Length: 244
Image (cartoon, rainbow, N blue to C red; front, side, top):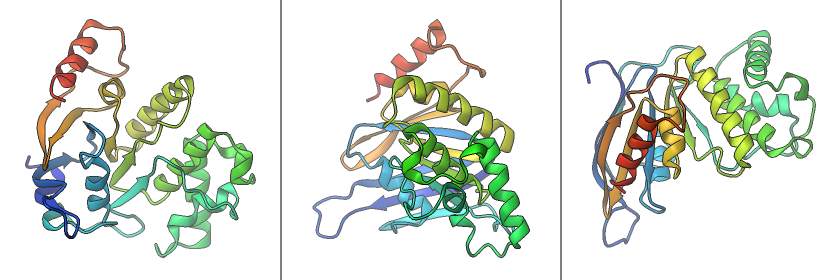
């Protein structure tokens, strides 16, 4: 893929002393502005791959390379976790601004970034609240706002909606699509839910095996907004399910 934003090439990760690696020889390209969903069974290494790409855990071998250096005032990646990991001693605004430390922004620029991402995530009215005073869905929006504030080129999301109820989950999915389309960043999204992957992503990749590898990589040939009850949607999810 000539227009790849990030290339994951021949990536291997294994824990010290383990008989075999979690995954071996993984290759994955993600284009500018592309939304890629990664599905697979528990323990196959999806979250570990995200942490490798984020630089939180070093790979055993292989290469993760961005196409060009990141511009000033941005980060290559930002991470949205399954549990929001909000700092309980910081109000919502301060949590959103936490990742801006070290970006060499003026105070006015930091405040503008925080205001912008609170608006994008519909959390403007909650900036002065403590984390314990917001709902689970609102806490996820704060976690997303914190990631968006650094204007990442690649947004990494590890099952971010799995802990909320079904109605809130669908609302957050629609909000994420709207934000992604507005900001144009690339997304690598881990989920166990094939329907969620098909609803959100441009491409769905399946990880399987031990050591794991990407065994299926399919473009979602349906435009947004997507209908979960549409026959094409159901056929797509079934094809992906057959690869697991």
